[in-house]
Structure formats: C-alpha cells, structure tokens
Length: 125
Image 1: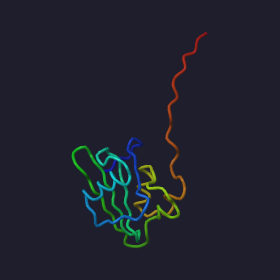
Image 2: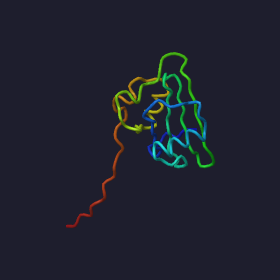
Image 3: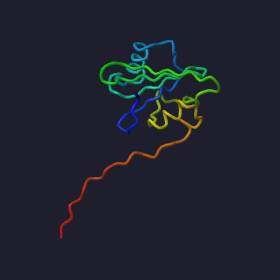
Image 4: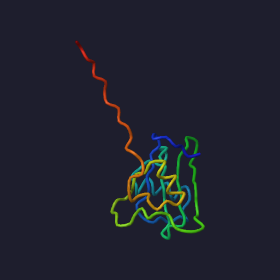
C-alpha cells in the first residue's frame, strides 16, 4: 500500500524510462541516475516514452514493491516536457492524480507547500 502522508517523498524520473525493467533495473536507475537510495522508502515514478504506462518503485521496509499501471485510453501527463531536471518531486496527492490520468501534474503545483514549524519563542515579562 502506498502511504499518503507528507513524510513519504515522491520523485518522478525526468525522462522516458524503459519499463521493461523490473525491480533490480529500476532500483539501479534510482541509485545511479536519480542519486537516491532505493531502500529509503521514497516512491520513485517512471513513465514510458508513449506515456501510456507507469511504474512506481517503493521500499516498504521488508522488500521492494513495484506498482504498474497501463492507461486504456489517453496518456499520462508529460513530466519531462521542456525540462532539463533529472527528477521532479511530487506530493503523494499529486502522484495519485497523475496515476488517475490528470494532465495538470508537473505543469503547476497542485498541493500546498508543507507546513514548516517555527521554533517557539519564550516570552518574558
């Protein structure tokens, strides 16, 4: 099961991926091309060149999980269109919208920025 908290980070590979790759091939891409640890618990999204297939690689603490989806009509949003970045960070909500076929993911921010706690200031007087 894919978590839905902000503690889970989602990284989308910023170019078309060869989705014939399985657990080991995609884990190697996470390590070598994204510069991330495939065993970190982060979700890593890969999309095929024709944007009809996507895979999400995730370490759940006991093993690698691979979620695959094929759209029967339409295409996934293009996450690499005109971008030079090797990766794009999404929220889990944006990942869910992406996997449902939303064309807005990657084009504009769909989730608010995470809340950042400020240190408490002790007032005297």
